[in-house]
Length: 205
Image (cartoon, rainbow, N blue to C red; front, side, top):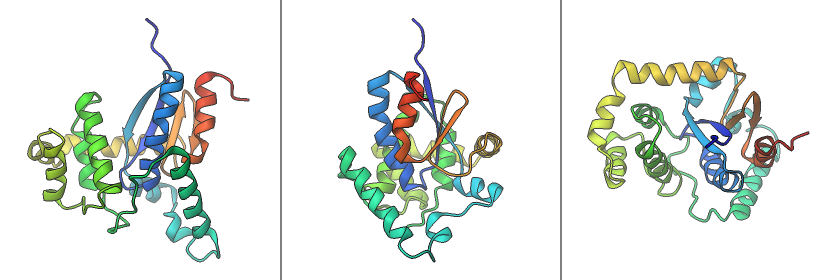
């Protein structure tokens, strides 16, 4: 049986738009049969390497820009029925430990469970996920070995994996998150899921 197309998702828990895109991509996957490959990268590292800034910093002085960004988020939430989303009260959040913990896992069932549980901790439950005890509790409740994953998160090979993923993403032209690749085609932003679906289906022009 021939494997379906793959959507590579350049991902960091720190981005609320990554949460929203992750949820929206599920519909794309269901309609097209595409596989979603989450690639853990550090958003701060991408920003540093490209000279980019978070929107609330880059556009904070532009009248109406952040208000419009929030309007787009509300529209996206309504369109996809994402009623559990809430802005984390600790925003901007520090995702370094959570991202390293994810890099301690290979893609598979446990990896996917980690993503779902930690996204919920950040963007549904509003938890202080940079606190190791809080993160471990989230992982344990998801049926994962939180203590083991956090211990592995501190090892050099895991740190190197996250750094290498981030550098490779920058080399491909990534400047922010969420970014997606379908083959060589790069797509940025949760608002462009229709473009991703068109590339997967081979109907993009």
